[in-house]
Every structure is written in structure tokens, then in C-alpha cells.
Image 1 (cartoon, rainbow, N blue to C red):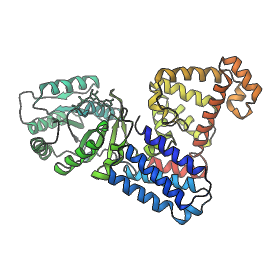
Image 2: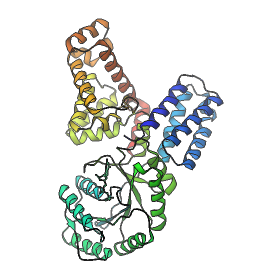
Image 3: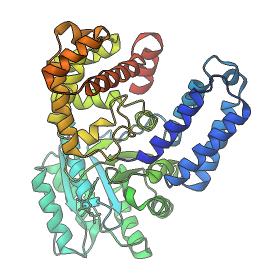
Image 4: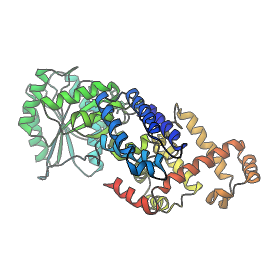
Length: 444
Ligand code: GDP
């Protein structure tokens, strides 16, 4: 999961601040020095770090913050806002043609995950009610055409090819005609990649661009290549002009520097992130949610959305209502964990649960998580209904009884109750007065 190290370090800095009560200018300066180091270690672009820290510092030293009753909280709020802004603010969606037929031109260097992402995008579009068609425009490597055909099959989407044609713009135009004629409404054009940006590649892409006039040019970059990904984005943007970035392999990138720098350096937003090799491992990028995840505040909205895809509408609405009303019981907590298990990705989803941030899941191994889940289940099942709904009544003797019933040591029960308490506290942010505003802000 991306941002692990950064998340852990920032949370350490804030924990320190929170322990202080009132803050002096020196406290802020010291904290900002650590934030700066943490960002640099996460491989964030140096200039971006400098501006970011300067901006946070200026705001944090403002009168209202220093004089407020909770200065540390205010500083965290500022960092949250600035991180969100840094990654692109409200987030950017795909734009579709008002005419009803949309062309997406996919560009990027070799090995970044372009072809895989074409498939993921087709799957995503289908889920969202579109009818996509894929088009293979790599005239150099027949294997690339084969690969796209395999991808197309996997996501049940037709692939347009013209194996003997050596003019990619003609292939793309023919694909457009065919797609429109057959009633498809999005054409995803996969193009050739190179190991690095060169004139010939750019000329070819410009020719395709002029011929098909795509609604979006999406650049695929590999998060694992860090600042090289950002440089590639800058290069493509200058020579071709891009509309958005898809950052792949975020699942394997523990630093996250590319994702934090790309928007600021190129001016172009990240629209999607790739979080795995499977075709459903593509997520729309929400800067605000990502900032919350980095700061360990969890990402309840993404969790709710994931749940919606697995629950029926009624279950999802019930969960959302509970969170809003702060009536989230241990039973719900267990049910959530069960859903997560069903969704297949404990590691992926854990970071979204408040109180289970990256420091809690550092080096988490899936088998261990599965085992822990079974233990948690045993503990909660050994509780009475009343205890599950109101864990505050769990005194020492009740905990001993549950321990005997579940075969788990009392320490495990204590830690479960603590985790639940943290999750619940975080969820309070989404309920009550301030919460509604926050929810709205996130939904935008
Ligand atoms: P292309 O040369 O740019 O078309 O790259 P490919 O689509 O062939 O992908 C290169 C490799 O990256 C393949 O092994 C993909 O499975 C892998 N890949 C692509 N996207 C992701 C991702 O988001 N996460 C992970 N872990 N692997 C990915």
C-alpha cells in the first residue's frame, strides 16, 4: 500500500504535537522539519516539498491556530487540507463527449501497465453503464496486439485490430467508425510504448491525436519509478498535452512520492490509480480521501463504496446510517471485517478503516490477518448481545469469561475493544454537526 512510511512518520509527528497542549513557534518549526524529512523520504519532488512545508507553516503559525484550544488538531487539519490540494483538490473525473461517443487515447512508456490499464478501464466503464471497445495501435510489436486481445477477452470487450496497417492514425480512425457503427460509445485506443520518450514516438502520438481528436489523453505512469514517473508526465504533457494521469502499481509502492508530486509538477490531475494486477484493481483517485488515509483518519467513503459493490443497497444504506448516527457496534465491526474478508483484500482495505492505519498494518501478512480475523470473530461471538452493542460494560470479569469462551487471552480482547473504540471515535467525525460538512466536502 502506498504512503506507508510517510503515513507512519506524519502520524508520529502529530502524536508528538498532540501531547504538548499549547504549541510554541519552535514546536511548529520542529514539526515542520520532520514533515519535510518525511516527504523527502517518500520521494516527493524537492521543490514540491519546500512549497508545501512553507505553506503549512505559514498557516499553522497563524493567530487562530496558535491561540485555539486544540492547536495540534488545527495543524493536522491544515496538513490534511494542503495534502488534498497538493494531490488535486476535489479530484477529476473522466469527461465524456457530449455527442455520446468518447475517444480515450492511452499513452505511456513500455512496462508502465498501459495495456493492462486499457482492460481495467474497459471493465470500469462497463460497470458504469458504458459500452467500450478497445483498439490496438501498436504497429511495431505484434505481441502487443495479441496481449490486448487477451485483455479484451478477459474483460469481455471487443478489440479492433488491423494487423497489416502501419499507420496507427488510420487504425484508430477505422476503429472509431466501426465502434460507432456497432453502437459502442467509448473507444479506448492503446498506443505503442517506448523505453523512453523520443521524437518518433511523440510524432506518432501527435498524428493519432490530430486524426481522432480524443476527448481525453490519459498518460499511464508507474508509481514504482518515483520521480521518473513525474518526469515522464512532464515530458508527455509538454510534447503531446495530456488531460490526466493514471498511476499504476500503487499497491507495490510504499513511498508514494510520485502520486504526491505529479499534479503540482505537471498541472495535470491523477484520475485513476492501479492497485493490483487484476482487472478490477483500478480506482478513481480522490485526493481528499487519500489525504485522510495518509493521516490515518481512514477512508470511510471508499469503504462504503466498496461495501456497496458487495452489499445490496439496503445493507449499504444501513451501514451508512449507523456511521452517521455513531451507532456502530462491535457486531457491525465484525460484519465489516467479514465483508472485507469476502472482498478478498484485507491488506488493501485495512488502510481504509479508521484506527487501522498503515502503522497498524505495517508488514501485515495476509495469513496473519486472516488468523486475526478468526480470533476476533471468536471473541465477539463469545460476547452477549448487550456486550456487543455496548462494549463499555466489559469489566474485568466479563473479559475473563469471554477469554475462556473464545480461547483467546484477555490481552487480545483488550486490543480488540481498543481498536473498535478507535474506529468508533473516527467515525464520530462523520456524524453530528461538523461531520455532515465533512461528508459533503468529500462527496463533491
Ligand atoms: P505496458 O507495456 O505498459 O502495456 O504494460 P503491461 O500492461 O504489459 O503491464 C506490465 C506489468 O505490470 C504486467 O505484469 C502487469 O500485470 C503489471 N501491472 C499493471 N498495472 C499494475 C498495478 O496497478 N499493480 C501491479 N501490482 N501490477 C500492475
